[in-house]
Image 1 (cartoon, rainbow over the protein chains, first blue to last red):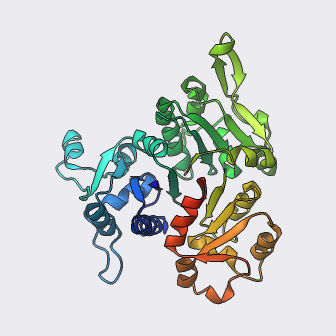
Image 2: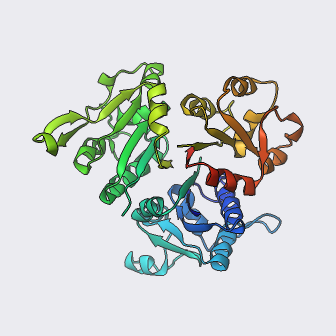
Image 3: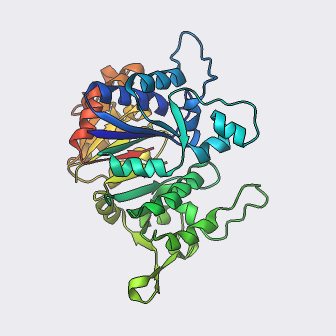
Length: 130
Length: 134
Length: 100
């Protein structure tokens, strides 16, 4: 089956990001396809490349980035939510006149239409949030 | 493109958190995809639709006016749970009067808000294919 | 259409659990995850609501139960699933509704 996942919360603040990750991992292991993971609200913060969590705890942004790379996943960060919260890739950052960008590998920034498309194209859409 | 029954669930009050505002943004963008869209306002979500919101002193954007535009975006199935209103001491009169124009009936103005009981809403929810929660 | 409902809030913290039960129809499944697993424990008002919701199946995410030290307090009739089981529940139902 084709699953899409919506993640509404940032890393660590709420368990949503963890549960979504575990679900995605289990779905892949079960032979399902993840059509898209869409990060909305504070969920965009899962895409940061600057997180340095304590060594003895899981590194949520890194886990997502690696899951994406290993499985060729489409991790989409909503541009509107990202702009509000200062999550930028190189192009967006240049466009806004900033020097720095913070979007991690494995993620891309795009519009809310990607979430709707995910709902249309997938067999199931599961939301994780607070 | 397939047409699916999309349901947006709104259970949170406005301004205290960002969910009400950002979920409305999804609805507006989503309108371009010509799906079979419904919105449900349940629990504190009903507070999103109240009249007379004035955010000047708060310094936040007053986005309550946007609900009035939903009809122009072909979003006209807006379910409000009766019990949620009653529990909060509200009536339909406390909510904005949301309308849409039915082009199949000479652009006659019709109510977008469907006041439903919990049981009726349960039936509506049971038909939905894609549910977005915020 | 068969619906899988997910509830992730403690029934004592928020009305989410009650709202979900009020809107789930017979034949649906309610999966308790994250802090929602507290509703799967014995000897409280949630347990009573679950046993009164005859037409609804209940499941609970095992890893969340274990994390919170609740395995010994699990109410009867609630199926424990792991993340693989969560995925299977999603596949087996026509649609998922998240009660956040």
